[in-house]
Length: 273
Image 1 (tube, rainbow, N blue to C red):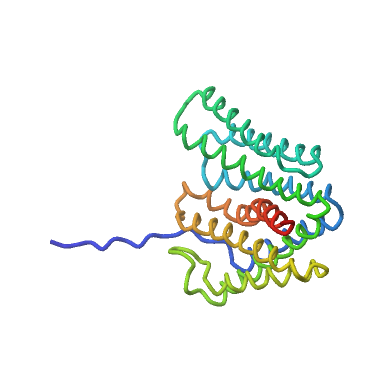
Image 2 (cartoon, rainbow, N blue to C red):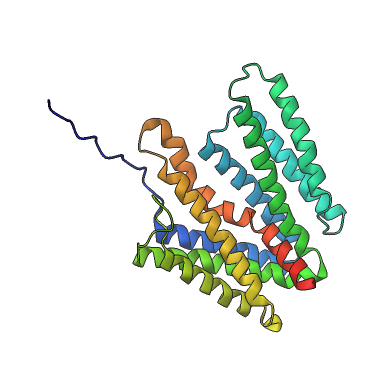
């Protein structure tokens, strides 16, 4: 009896490491420039990040009833942005936005004509709502006096970490951070170090606290970057995965910055004591 060897699994092509790192750093640099202008300019940039991160996540996850989920995500993003502006940079009502989005998500499931994969669709709804609310938290922190320099330091750290980490991964591929990942431990160490250094430079008048903000921001974006990389490991070159493969690049660019807000918020609260 002849045993046929199983063909090795083919993985979808990943975005180029260096190109993606440079692009991610440019996104961070753009947001940092807007943060130096004023809080309203940064809010406009974050609104773009919310939209693109939302689109990228829906494409990569292939969310059921994606049109309705997208509409709810856009409404949640708008509500989150309005809340942080009206409440002078406070985040206490972002939880209310998420709670109302849950009710709206349930109603969305009830009015669907074909109610397949209901749980998955509702879960994707809550993920995107939480994602845009998290991005709004960064705009909220930047609108407070004590949060101006941490926001700038975090954005500088995020951009530097994403670029330096990709350079490290390009040079040294092993040991990998996880099975199937193209991110390696040397790249992570380099990313964290670059984040601390960049934050210290961006907030040179807060040398005692800037490294902590930089380390937290670098760790957050590195984790988000690894998440996208592991999602890519599940994709194949097959035609049915083509849309998800195409969405990897924008998702990898904007998702880390969308998730940066809660980290900066936590750092500010820790610094304040």
